[in-house]
Structures are given as C-alpha cells and as structure tokens.
Amino acid sequence: MFIHLEEHELIRQAIQGDKTALSQLLQQHYAFVYKYLLKITLNPPMAEDITQETMIRCIEKIKLYNGKSKFSSWLITIATHLMIDQGRRRKREKHWQEQEQQQSLRQMQWQAGHQHEAWPDVLNALAELPQESRIPVILKHYYSYTYEEIGQMLSIAEGTAKSRVHHALKQLRKELA
Image (tube, rainbow, N blue to C red):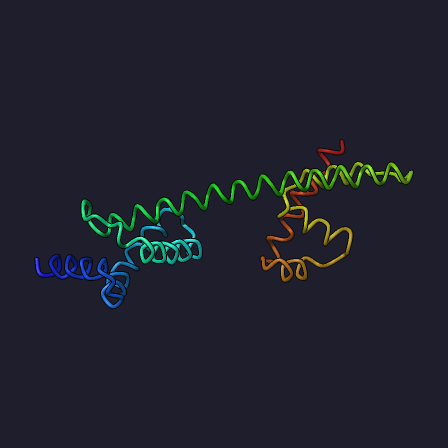
C-alpha cells in the first residue's frame, strides 16, 4: 500500500510539473515498458527505441493522465500505439521505396531503348529480387568480391552471404528460364 501511495503522490507531483517526480516515475517504469516491448517486437533495438519514445511521450502528455487506469497501463497503451504506428510507417516507407525503384527501373529501360542499347533480361530479373538478395549477387557476380568480403560489407556471416547468393541465383535461373 505504501508503494501505491508513493506512486500516486509521484504522479500527482509530476502532473503539477515536478520534474524530479516525473523522472522517478519514468525510472521506475522504464524496465517494465522495455520488457513488454521486447516481448511483442522480439527486436531489442526496436524495443529500446520505442521505450525511449514512450518516455518522451509520457513527458509531453503527463498532464493528460487521468488516473482511470494504472500508470503502468497508461504507459503500455502509449507504447503499443507507438509500436503500431512505427509498423505502419515502415510499411508505407517500404511501399514508397518499391514504387520509386520500379519507376527508376522503367526510366533506365527507356533510356537504354532510346540510346539503342540492349536491356538485358537479367536486369529485369535482378529487379524482382529482394534487396537483401540482390546486393550480394551483384557484389559477387558483377564485382567479383569474395563471400568473406561480401559478409564484411553487409555485416553478415560469410555463410549467410553464400546462402543469399545461392538462393538468388536459383531464383534468377527460374525467372530467366
């Protein structure tokens, strides 16, 4: 009961503008929010980023806390909304990047045709590969880097680079057949 009253008093003081009380509240709940986000994102850096954003949002909106739910529940609600918003934002960014890539590809094809140059089918097939596969294939087969070098460049294991190239080539052969 003492802890509950202490938290209630910290909340009251934080709402009235006491920065020390707000700081204590955030410190008390930081690990709780982080562990929650870690469980739902399964991504430590993302969980850390969203936890920090949650704390910032709490600082900005503390005066809106009405006490109808537990303070921890209010923070979880903020964190959940931020996580969902970030997912939507990433989805939109990915869609926008894909559209931009398709437009660039069409422009490159048009320029090649306009300059009476051949546009290899392999470039169309490469465009169909996901970026994480396309980059290692290009580094290996256009620039002759070793799998070790590719792994170092992309911060992935050498075996992962080899695997991505293998699967990408398999997909390219299928596309070009």
